[in-house]
Length: 305
Image (cartoon, rainbow, N blue to C red):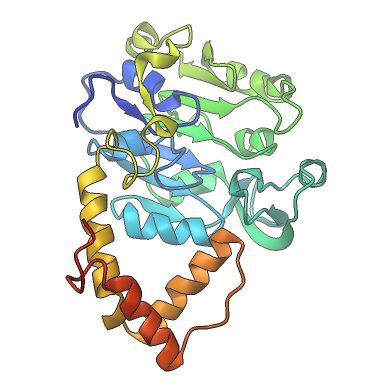
């Protein structure tokens, strides 16, 4: 099924607003700090899918592994970004990865279970230098309270993104946070352009071309198709990959009894984790028979439609 509205992968149409500023530019480079999932909720995936590439920073291991598999053109940096070269406590929310933060007060206020890791941090200036970035079209920062530290660790003279997008609302409370760091951007030659109710967009003062195209008000919500509207690919025929998902589903279930035992065990464990269900590790004749029974509705064992 085709759609007249473009699909936005981001939480609040950040990718769409950026696309208006970069209209007609076929290739470009971004830095995505606090990238999260490589597709769902991503600000940079819109551009990656259209041929762009860049540096993606994501310290959480499971998300970093996904990035490496799904976005091979990007350079993945599994680290924290801060004022400089140091070690910081990182509070990780496995179930709600978007809450993970270096700010202890934010972690405690979330009222969700988390674990604490000690991770290395580098400055934004070090990140840019180590990747020899000559041109940066946009920089996105979503660090759950550490935005000011990241901005303070930049070299805004040597490395000047055309547009800077920064989450400007505190998680949970919804309080404004930009008073803590906006003056640093303004003092380094960036002009405020847009507040979309969650993020603030700034344009480098020398980029009149971008300022002319950058919207100053949030676009109508129905200007794009949102991720929640397409839902799960197998279940929703408006999803752009609905047919592919159906074929994969049937092929997977039909192939289930033929998969290696360690693969089946890993799939089962992952499914139990996501479902919150506890099952014994499958092995033995009874378990193999169950796999065959499940597959028989898909492999031609019996006709179910």
